Image 1 (cartoon, rainbow, N blue to C red):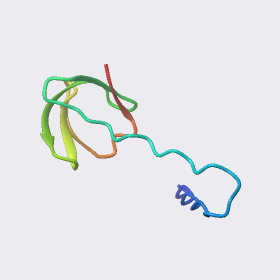
Image 2: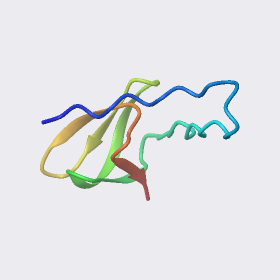
Image 3: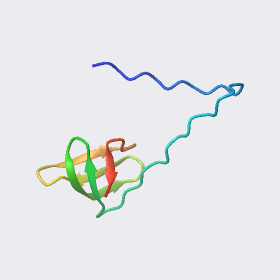
Image 4: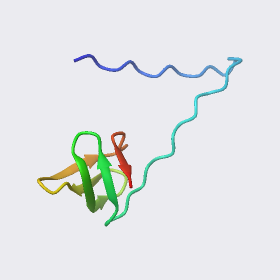
Length: 73
């Protein structure tokens, strides 16, 4: 498996606008979420800025920040 390339840094002299960084996702206990690999679940615990503990029914998973594959429903 190949590692994704590192993002290129924006030069201050570039005529193009700097890419926007997405806002960090925030979840609260009780939020219903969906994950690309694990499916539908509910947040049962939060570690501030580090991870979210999610109950997917069959398993409980600790999903690490930045939560790229998880969205709030």
